[in-house]
Length: 101
Length: 218
Image (cartoon, rainbow over all chains, first blue to last red):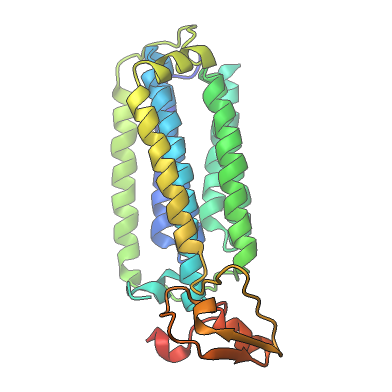
C-alpha cells in the first residue's frame, strides 16, 4: 500500500499553515514574500495529488498556470520591495505601515 | 518503499518549511525554501507527474529563488532583531485554537473513506499536458502570456530610477554642465538653465540615485 491521498492533503495543509504563520509573524518583507511562495507550493501539491489520484490532467495544468502567476508575482513583488527599500532604507513592514511613499 | 520515500520527503519539506519561518537571516530562509521546493519536486515524481517536477525545479528553485537571492544580496538585508512580543496574553488562546484546528483536521483525515488508489496513467507526461494545454486550455494559456507581459512592464516601471537621462547625456562629477532638459525629458524645453555638479554626491542627487531627504519621507 503506497501513500494515500489524504496523506498528501495533510502534508499540504501543514505546509500551508506554516506559510500562513510565517506571513503573520515575519517582519521582513522578503521573508513574508518567501512564505507566500510556500503557501502557493502547498496548494500546488494538493492540485498534483488530486490530478494523479483521479487521473485528470486539469490539475497539473492548473499547477503550471499557478507557477506562471508565481513568477509574475515574484517579478512585480521584488520590484515593489526594491522601491520600498529605496524610499525607506528598511525592509521592516512596520516601517512601511502607511501607503504614502 | 513508497511510504518510506513519502515520509522522507514529506518530513524534509516540513522541516525546511519550519526552518523558513524560524530563521532570522533572509538568506538562510531562501536556502531552506529551496529545500522545500526540491522535496516537493520529489513528491511530484512519486505522484507520476515528471513534467511538473521538472518545471518546479527549473522555475521555482531556479528562476524565482535566484531572483529572491539576488534581491537579498542587492539590498544588503540585516538580520531581524529580536523584539518584545506584543499582545502576549493572546498566546495561550492561539495555542488552544491551533490545537482545536489540528484536532478537527486530523479527525477529518482519519475518518475519510478509503481513497482512490494511484493508477498507472500517462497524465503526467509532457505529451498529455501539451495536448490539453494547446487545445482545451488554449485561452488560459494565452491569457497567462499577457499576464507575464504585464508583469515585465510593471517590474521595469517599479524598479526604474526616478531620474531619466536623455540619450547622449553624460554626468561626470566635477566638470559637467547639463541642461535641465537633458536630465529630465519631461521638463519644459524652454528652461535651458545648466545644472552643474562638483561632487559625486551632487551628481548622484541630480540623477535621483540617492535616497530622498529626511523631510520628504514624513
